[in-house]
Image 1 (cartoon, rainbow, N blue to C red):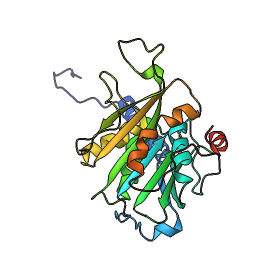
Image 2: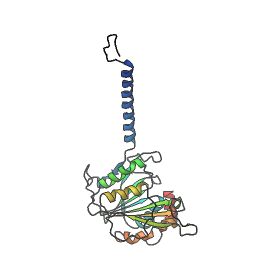
Image 3: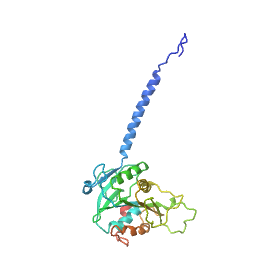
Image 4: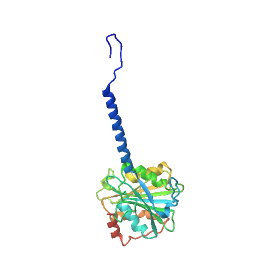
Length: 275
């Protein structure tokens, strides 16, 4: 502001100061809301008492040579039908999380039939872990899931196999799939995985998303041998034909634990469990 004598004076504006105060209050309120949302959407790994002693806070102490992860009702049903029913497996942990589609917030073991993410350990070969995931993991929770699960394991000598369901409508190809053999498998692997995959590789421009992609990306970054088998199916719910599509994986699984080569007689109950 210029005076009569031409002197320039600074102008004090109460309006600007009040606006700044309101902006600071809004920023603090937004920050508090953001922290509350982040806390609510935190991913937790709950290990049960028989393994809690071997998983100390902040230390990777759980010995694991092979981790098999099944994502989706058919992949999880396959493990139940061909693997988990044939040997003695103990439930050793689960993931608790909250998002718009999942309410797995309880620190207690999930109830039968409830969408969840459960971990099992082979009683005779405790270095083998199985994970069945039928709950939805939101995009902002994927990194947490992979980071916390693998953060509980010794990565040295670890091998990972992922089985995943996907609608055939997501599969991109210039060819007409009408009349083709659906469901079918495609594979992706990390650069550290040196063995031959059990099915053709996933063709470009197809991409993977969700939890399977997050796990494979984590393994790629940390140089963990990992292979992912993606089943493309035209059936949304649990289906015996789709489950049997994963049977080539039994070749690798049979080297670790005893597996069944025929469909488990209680498959109907398993389908109802994962539906």
